[in-house]
Image 1 (spheres, rainbow, N blue to C red):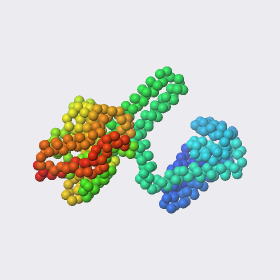
Image 2 (cartoon, helix red, strand yellow):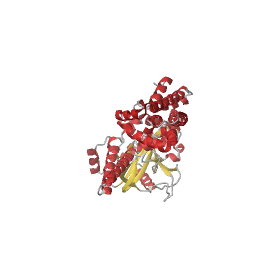
Image 3 (tube, one colour):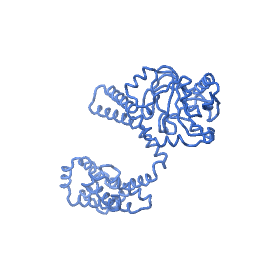
Image 4 (cartoon, rainbow, N blue to C red):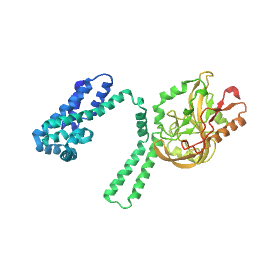
Amino acid sequence: MFEPLGMFIGALLDALIGPNLFVPGEPFLIAAGYQLHQGIFAGLIAVLAGGWLGDQLSYSLGKKLGARSLRRLTQWQPKTRRPIARSRKLMSKKGTYVLLFARLLGPVAWVVPFIAGVHKVEWRRFTLLSSIGLVLGVGQFVVWGYLLSYGIEAFPALNQAALFVGEHLYSLMVLAATLAIFVWGVKRQWSRLYLKTALVFTLSALVANYIHFFWRADDIVKEQASVEYEMRNRAIAGIETISPSSLKAYPGRSLVFDAQAMNIVFKGESPKVIMEQLGWIENQTFSRNDIQWTDYLQLLKDATPPVSDLYWQDRPQEMAFQLPGNLTHRSHIRWWQAGVDEVTGLKVWVGALSYDNGLTLTPYSGIVTVLHSIDPDVDKERDRLAEQLVQFIPNIITELKALKSPVEEGDEEHDYFTDGQVLVINYQSSSI
């Protein structure tokens, strides 16, 4: 299908009145751009030639068959009535611009060459303007195909845009549904329009929250199994080589979210051992556990609600713990394995420790939801953990290291403040 002949036929049918109602040309144009990046020009020539011939045939059919065939076309395909009416109106008012930019005007492009023939537009004028428009219209998809051949990762801005749209899809759908209801209500002159619109927004937001937390939260872990395996087994020269800028976690995968501090480093098989020794309770997380609505209610009853996911280097925490508390106030920590110390052979874990101080409405991972408000003084919790370790595990080795830059209180770019020091915990079975 994507040989030159197939691409020629695809572009021809995409431009020819009648078949173009059923045949999408974009795959052929994008394929031509992809092949162009490989140094193959035949596909580009094929789609340009096919599109040009299709425009010429549509123009000739319109000129020869005239208004009678236009009526038959609308009877055969009623969905063409609106684009035909729109293109005829535009043709009569701004014919030059329509011929130039028809391929950028969506469904109007289906019928413009045919309408130009019906209106007896001079052939040379039509050919010149439509040929320029063909280059513009085909060119935009060829460029996309050319860029996609590099891989979207080669274009950080495009990668982030795609990630943002994918992550915020449900919020965008909520806004679209709310706007649609509002516009419909204005046209129908609904009473209490604002109240009804607010109700639709609220219900849509609740549905988005339910889908996010209870249906799709565990999808990312399934998708990134190979990435996690690589991260867990990568060699680390030492904790001093950990980039200061990487000691931040985010409540979402795109870069529009404010960071939360990572202030603990653990060297040992697993931090779960010391967490349990210190009386911390392991939390369930939405990404790692299959939490149903009934499970969620029971966890709330036990004052151990699931921990919302934070993302470090594009992956959610591997485990999370909390000290006994209540539903609105608790100390909690999330852990990620960062790799293996190549000198000692010990696993290296990084943790984000903070304190939940009440509830707040906040943007989180593409939705708006109610989550805990984080106490900005993250050093207080770090020091509290250090005191616990000294008290209950006297022989364990701990130290504070300045692994990142300080953040002053009131810094508008951060929701927390810190002196930049990280608590480093060395734990081996011989430590106790």
